[in-house]
Amino acid sequence: MKKYGILAYPAKHSLSPAMHNAAFRELKMDSEYRVYEIPEPEFGDFLKTVKHEPISGLSVSLPYKEVIFKHLNVVDEDVKKIEACNTVFNKGGILYGYNTDHVGSNMALEEVVGNLNGAQVCVMGAGGAARAIVYGLKKSGADVVIVNRSQEKAQKLAEEMGASVGDLSCSGDILIQATSVWTLNPDTSLEEFAPREFVSGFDIVMDIVYKPLSTPLLAMAADIGKQVVTGEKMLLYQGVKQFEIWTGEKAPVEVMREALILNL
Ligand code: ATR
Image (cartoon, rainbow, N blue to C red; front, side, top):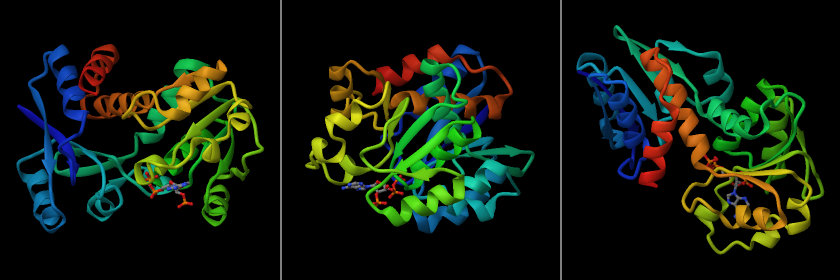
């Protein structure tokens, strides 16, 4: 049996096991996906286990997306640019690092827009999540404007990725909420963070938050009559891409989607 899993701390609430195990069952693969909730002092020893047990593939989440770097044998170009690795593939003891987060956000949007080339996109946020999203958008040929509380961070990310910096007066085709504002400050006023007039300036609104699925921003966007993209889609498609890297098989997307939604 091949072993896969999520490496994170904490990791208990991850939806990835449900999604990947459903895919393995569907394709009748003798494989299992577990939770590897590893505290930082045990991280070094765990990586030895990955090579020797062996564990064939890992989804990597907080706080290891950057730390894992120096333990990889082969680092994909996307990982270097995004400076984060969310996928490890163990091929005969050689650890390959990939980033599928940016593929996930692109595919979630492509479900709706088909092609991102030339799309005018505004990304709210300039942290780790926004970084992968902006990278993916630029790779697909979109025009990206970054709006962030800290102008300095927005400027730095924009320069690195070939995007520009905007404010709450900008408009376009797609608006993406990629900050951790409500995770960190649940009392933040939506009207202050994303005024109705600002949201009205876009056709499609995506929020990367998936708990709850309908966030206050998406509820407002739907109320104005905008098309909304819920956050579980990015999670789904980053997993779909992971599955395909690990197995070389086409992922059963609808089975994975159903497993994800059932476990939300
Ligand atoms: P993540 O990995 O989730 O992206 P992060 O790298 O810590 O987390 O980035 C958090 C993002 O959420 C940043 O863009 C941050 O804005 P700043 O760069 O100004 O710090 C944004 N953020 C967090 N709390 C916020 C708040 N209360 N209002 C607005 N933006 C907030």
